Length: 254
Image (cartoon, rainbow, N blue to C red; front, side, top):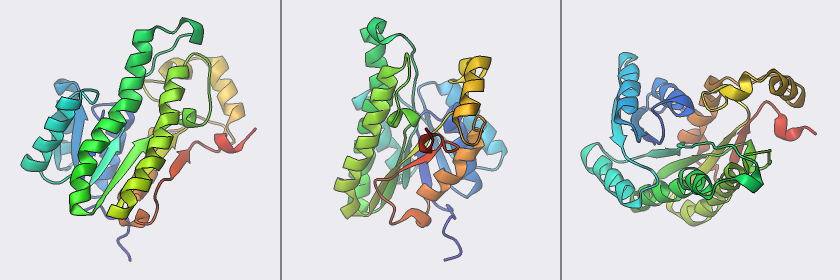
């Protein structure tokens, strides 16, 4: 029981891992021995990310596909399983953000947010889970958000999508746990990333955030790695349908 967090020999597919939190997770999981498959819609971005990880000694492949395209997803998962090997762990990380007042939110941007943040989780999980069911083994980790539980101005579609990810996680758990597949989620609080840079630069927002969060600061994306390792490893073999908030205590406070 001394190697509960060892990921040696585990092959992990991370969607949207060419940059941001996805790349940080890939980097962290690789340090625990995982072999990484980086997905991104951009071949250039995925290639650069893979090169950085290989320079650090990681075993890495790239899989270029659009997570919102069901045919492309099925083809890509099939190619990975045949040409690289079985996917032991899936991280549904790909996400986008759009900001508009609710009454003025363009339908096209609503559709884009829902497609990437919600529908893609269903599409990629379904394709991967079919193979995991056959093997009677696997782990799926969905990246949620504080908006899985809380709303905020100008991002209602994002909150709707991340709320759905919470329930997808629970529904998938109910159906897949009998096949020895653990489905859980990580819900980050407010972390300094490219997606949140506008808010980081907004002094009024940062002051509010530091007062609102018991830890009194923004999160560092590296602080998500521990949760990712836990949910990828044997340490979480009886953890299922759980959404792990990594938020500095924000959800606990009023």
